[in-house]
Length: 278
Picture 1 (tube, rainbow, N blue to C red):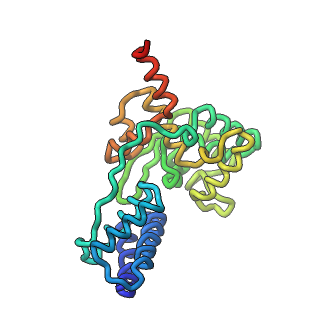
Picture 2 (picture 1 turned 45 degrees about the vertical axis):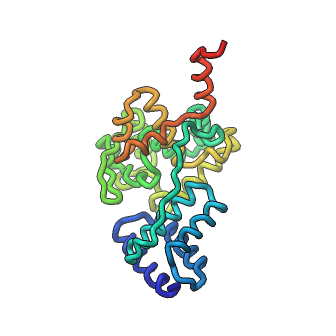
Picture 3 (picture 1 turned 30 degrees about the horizontal axis):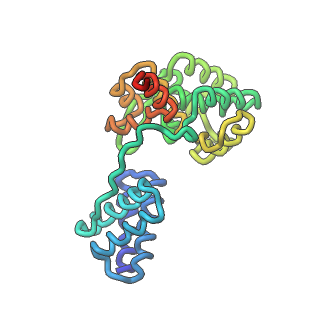
């Protein structure tokens, strides 16, 4: 069984690639499935064994991580014709607020941008502003090209989906000035010295380098948090979650709801303001 699963795993990874799943997703799925194969230790895979493995995962990982691993296993089981091995994911109630230690505030974001500017790192400053002012995913940053800046909109094509990301006036002007200064005529704006689009790990590392100078906790500083900040600021100004979902490229509005949760402190202020305590 173990040898058979290992062989089928390689075929499944090819299947995921053809389905245009991201390299990060494929790595995550591969690790989760290999962990299960190791757990089997040559024992036949039965529904009872999978349930036992699920219970073991719950003792080790947070619920969201357990569900991610179960999603990988369930997909693999369906691929190999083992639908009878699939197990239910954990039910997780959506958290009503974001932990304060993880929420990047607008003031903190602006300090990060200004710190990059003081250090003369215009590229990093504009990169953060581009993500935060458009709500774009860091994986979509390569679609912010010289051509897109001139048009005022970027055509993003990923995972079989196509959407348009608008580049507003002030951001567009700032990028045009940068293009002239850097001599960028075509292709992605944010590239490495070798001319390749910057990837997530490089961007994260550069942003983390600003933390001490900006006085911002490192656990708050990562590219995707800029997208969350955009979502909260846009929703606070517009209060139209459907429009926000379109801008973010979400097909499910429940995903968008996760982006606009605020800290527990804001919930406490609103509860106190109800005037229900004498």
